[in-house]
Length: 425
Image 1: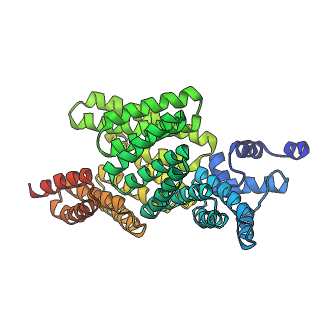
Image 2: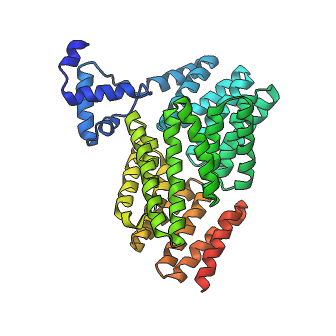
Image 3: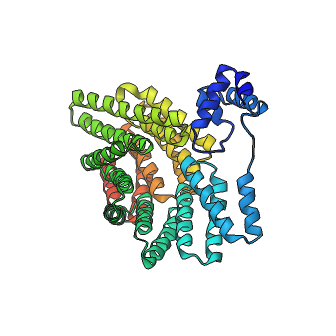
């Protein structure tokens, strides 16, 4: 091994060191380019050199094949264990979506065959995670609710709190904010009772994201500062970076509010702090090779809304979409199309903005994610309003209004009605 390492170039050695820091034993070849900050083709060339030197291995889909074989042989305990491990890996990487989806189904089947209700509850949560990531929030919520029922009956209070959080996040993703709040607060209380401060803080971050969606940034900021203190105290760098990303989003929202209120000096300071928080989070994820999380930071950086930084923000969004496309995250790509549309609208490029926002609407419609579809329609109407086209804004806003009504999303409905009033002025 030493002789092989000695024969490597400096770049190949750097790639090997960075690959060794990844928590996943298996990554797509394009990851090499991201780790080296070079093109995908150049990165693949360096990776191929490591394979030739027998310092890396191209293994294909060995683990998936094992899971399928174990299932065909009806080795249900083995199938369940392998499926659980694979789902945990995919959840960490936010990648291999099609395989993750297939394996999570096998995991649920294996748990049912063994008759282990605790294992079934855990498998249902694994399944809910991938369904939520693919935009199938209603199906994921049904599974998480079943898991919550199982864990409650078994007296598994910690797992019940996990299921409660999953149900809350699914409701949040579907726009049912009032119900989501009850589950998230319940989960926070339960984790505190279990003395699990990490999960308590993580769920506080989720609640903060919901508060931000409700336009309550001050409450969101306090929740995030409390969560950040927990993660910093215990040295949870990954969770700290996630919270810094959310914190940057809140700081940006507050800065936009200050700017609307005419306090441009304070807004400028707020935009700078938001950018710093997001850049710091992105850097932490980049060092760990966490490409999906880095993409989320880039997208958030593209949504800050600093009028002096419009072109750079659009570039952040484009880079985020490239990463998410490579990762196969169809929901993330749709979400980034929305960000691109808003960034283009801020630059006054209305035709391009409309194209991106309609792309987001159609993508969320295909994913059956009505809450985000409504939000995309609302932003499409708002973009037309801001560009001086009230008549073009009416139809998308009316569509958004009907979706919000059907979801019972009062916050979204209230904002849409405010915009519709502007079309009549």
